[in-house]
Length: 197
Length: 338
Image (cartoon, rainbow over all chains, first blue to last red; front, side, top):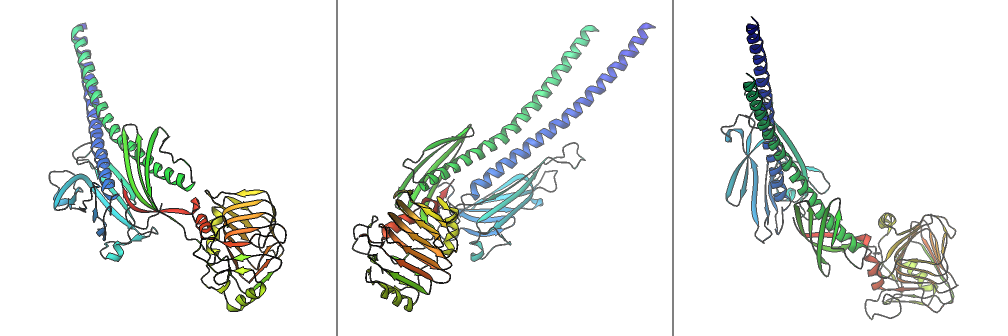
């Protein structure tokens, strides 16, 4: 009789222990996913921020004549000597649309295209928002799109804002919560004339 | 049963350990990405700080321009080369294992300066002009000490805004020299637009009337801005007596009297409601450079004295030195790479 109760009790203890371990495992998995998504989104945000800063800070370097060719709220084309070797690069940034990203579970993702000369690279950073704003020397906003030479020459500062989200939901396939990072910075390219120190 | 429990506990411990290690690894990677960006930003700020530090050292006319420094756990280095008005600066900021480089080519220039095209340029009307004794106003171009003639760039002795005032000045005395001695020149710039900036950047600020002696303002290598604000009192509010030497820009708001051994090298701006400028009979006050007299309702200039030195001598070199006051300097970017 005593052995019978021992077996029942140990079975219950084993069941409770198993359920506890399973629960802990589930929570740990969720945390790991969350961590991993955070790593991916934040790393992507840092890399994209550094790329934008690297390119935009050089706008107009070693360029005689027109420095920015067109400017819109999600794209820009400019000339810059990126390597400081007296070779002027023709750089274009523009946002794609959501249909250009395949195999991703986040329906808001769209790609960013960076064209240098004739070579275009599609970059899938996990962007869900991109906004480029332009300011003149008095820090007055210039309405986009900016296409005429006189208005393009007024651009003295560029504010870039973006949001990157994870491709998968954090907790479950049916969840809508995603890891996200927002970044914004006003960049003042030093080679856009009329800048004094 | 006991052995099985031990295996179970060991197995669970191992599983939790692996999961914890994995989570720690991803967290470490996340932190590394964030701190990497932070270090990169910090290094960039240090490189920019090096540019600022170098330029401010130039502005302060330091004998030795610093080529390195530290700040908040980071460091920076700066190298420069110059040719005429062009300045090349290369800086590198270091923070932890990150570094950031900047290369700038700058054009050094100065802010607009209300120059004067005469020994005394009067930008007020009507003018009351009196001379007695042996005062002298000379528009010929002297060196920065006011001792030797340059031989070129001679200017009028006194310029006024209207012909009737020129006639008044010409009638006042025969010791006004220049090419010509007296002339109408309406291009004399009204200095009032510059006064606030000079006040803001002044090295010496006298915000009340008084008598000043025994002071030295700046030096030939490091000219200064002196701002005396006497107000619009019709009595003599600012009076300079013995042993006053200055270089740069002297601004006097209100009435002024120069006496004794007063020597100023550079630009003197006298501005007020109905400005009275008096060079007293005592001593040998002298201004080498140029004087702008401006006023909203006319100006009164009285020159007295028995001293042998000229009271006011035009010097383009002294004016140019005053123009190069570090605080009024700014830099236009020709090229910037970072």
